[in-house]
Length: 509
Image: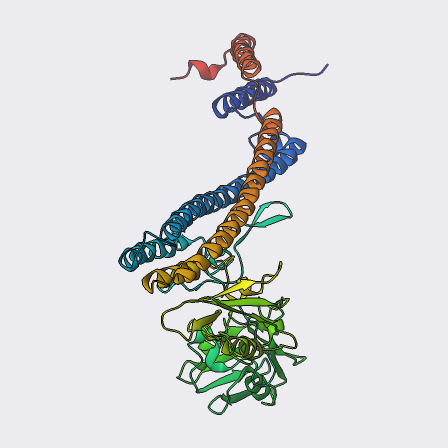
């Protein structure tokens, strides 16, 4: 016969009490947290599903934040471009009022002041900000998009945003697309193609020295004192004997250094010699990589700039344009032109034969061309011939050149140049049409963001619902279980106290 000792009964009673107590604690935790699964041990398979849902919800939240930011940019751009269009309509009304009688020179001079104010307003609109970012400056959004003279000062690359998995769209529009043109030349490795003095928007690169230390510890001093163009700079670096190759980056905007040493022992570094040369070239610093691309060097136009290097390497499909100055006009053919200087020569050749000569030059800002009248009392204009866009892209026509068009209108009003006012009206129609077109593309992107936002929001809702079905506790069920467990616990304690007899120890004091 098996004997059950008091010790065994005590242990069994404690085990049952602890088991019931553990159930009570688990039920109480579920009620207080509202969660059925509070740790992986509660439901290992369920926890895996919960973690996946949490990851998907986190991604959705991130995309929603990006979409809100994109929506702010695009909505602000749309609103601003609407204001620009309204101001252009106002400018056209003023031009129409002063294109003939009864307006006189005094009235036109007064109207010129109004147009100047409109132009200043356009510059302010071009520098619209969302938060601390200029929405029309492209990727250089920490700087104003348009300078005080109405010239584009931003980047040629638009701000991009991934608004959904594998869906990336531009969330900004550049002022160079609708306010003032930017020819944005790529760097050229041809002799005389890109001058060092034209880099960084024309501020250039200070002559001086910098040291390159390759990834095996060898160093060489590069002296740019006698270098004049990017070609000679690249040749100088490549001839330094470091097995480091300099080239123009794939996007044509910066310098790339490639360390070809097979067994590197340290980082590739470029240090300035004091004049800030390497800093201005965008390559100063230390990089633990064999290939490094520097900062955008933003070259200004030069006579030797290749037409194929304009607009970020896209080039320009040159078509004929028409020069108008007073009652005279002339057609310009760019046949055979390969450089910016060739284009300037073609315009100057055609313009020289006009009763009121027209001359062309690179604009002082180095981002577009400019034409001027040889007659101090008239204003020169350039128009497209046929369906071309050459004058627009060069910055001397209508289309994207809102600010230059307004400046010419103001000049024509001030000079009492009626034919110039009439020409301005034609160009105002062109810039208004372009503004409407660009605004339409902004609206299309805003609609795309809105549609995708609804999709992501719905996906987040579905994942949240599925996670809740796995993770959340059934309140009524858990409350009922807690009540039963409390009853069982009390019953266990009561029955245990009745079964286990008192011992001598209970009577000891």
